[in-house]
Each structure stands twice: as C-alpha cells, then as structure tokens.
Amino acid sequence: LSQVFATCVRRVRLGHVVLGTVIAPRLAAMNALAESFSVDDVIGKCTETRSAKPGKLIEIPEGQLKALCEASRKVFMSQGTLLELEAPIKICGDIHGQFHDLLRIFEYGGWPPESSYMFLGDYVDRGKQSLETIALLLGYKVKYPENFFLLRGNHECASITRIYGFYDECKR
Image 1 (tube, rainbow, N blue to C red):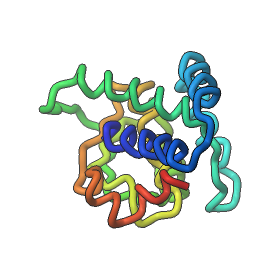
Image 2 (cartoon, rainbow, N blue to C red):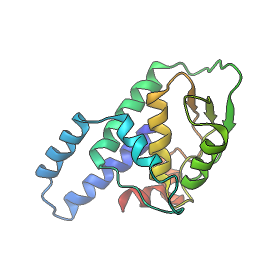
Image 3 (cartoon, rainbow, N blue to C red):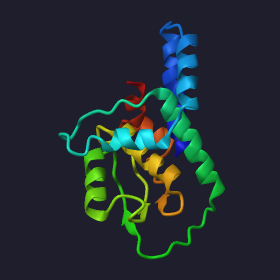
C-alpha cells in the first residue's frame, strides 16, 4: 500500500522534471520536511477538518507524505502477514476516498487508540479525497500499530489506481 502511494509521489516528482521545473531546491525542502516528520502533525492536519464542510481539502507537504510512506512501510514490514486479533475490534471496508465518511466512522466508533480497527482494503479511488483518506489511515497505522490494521484491497495496486482516479489525484 505505501509502495503504491510512494510510486505516485515519485511519479509526481518526475512530472515536475519533465515540465522543466528546477527541482533541486524543492528536493532539499522535501528532505527537510521529511526530517522534521511527525505523525501527529499529519494526523492533526487530517482531523482538524472534522467540523468543516465535506470536501475541504487538506494540504500535507510532499516531504511529509513521503516520510509517512516510509514510516508505514517499516511498520508493515515489522508485522507478520497473519493477523491474530482480539475482540473487540471494529471491521470496516471500502472507504474509496470518502474522507468525510472515514471521519464519521471514527466519530461513531471511537477514535484510535480508544477503539481498535481493521480495514479491509479499497482505501483509494472513486472518491475525491483519496490522499487525505490514505494519509490519515497510514498515520494511525504508524502511531498505533498494535490496534490499527490495514489489509490490502484490489484498489491498492498501481494498475487499478491508474484506472479509477488515485493516480490522477496524486498528479494534481
């Protein structure tokens, strides 16, 4: 999952090179943001829109998104592929970029770490806020790896994200 997201981030960066943008200063700024990465900052930016109108876009710097992908990859790689979970746990599926719906799930079910969650995949595509959705989910995964679980769905694949919209959202 974080690999697909990192691929989108990488392709966005390559797109700037093709357009002739001077990228060295941007890369230095991204590296500085990655070094100052705080998962709490990403979660805070995502959750500060709780009372806002649905569809309000959130700006998370590219360097922080890249650092979030790297941190989540480390968490995923440190955990086994077989999950043996204990009740109570809330099971959710098919968010498809509906960020406001994800926030409502947390409002009704309880915010992590008060409630444990397992998401069954399909976090991106179709909805207008896939980046915000995956950023919040990965942020909670990094912060609470023992009671927040993300499984890979068929939409967490490069070829599917090109067809259904996440790739295009990353390019914008």
